[in-house]
Image (cartoon, rainbow, N blue to C red; front, side, top):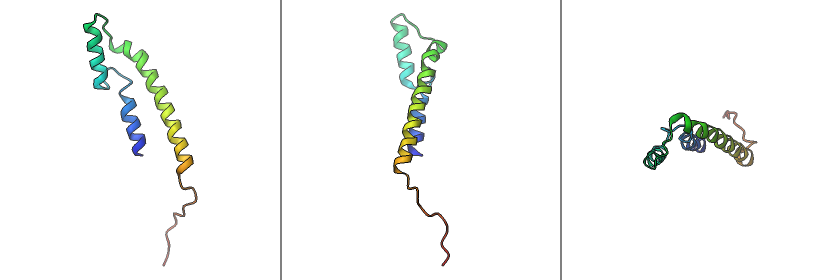
Length: 80
């Protein structure tokens, strides 16, 4: 669960211009250089990157789950 939350928080910032502070810094630097990047323009690239990176992380977490999860754990309560 902790890994899923970490991946979600990290990759969520890739989707929008205001999603992460690094995106805002990059946009302001681009504007200073005379090549402003708008919200919609950023979304055209950022949102597909968000979807792809989230899909890859999802596959990674599912693979880890299959490799390391204890499959034969008895969860029935014991009666004494």
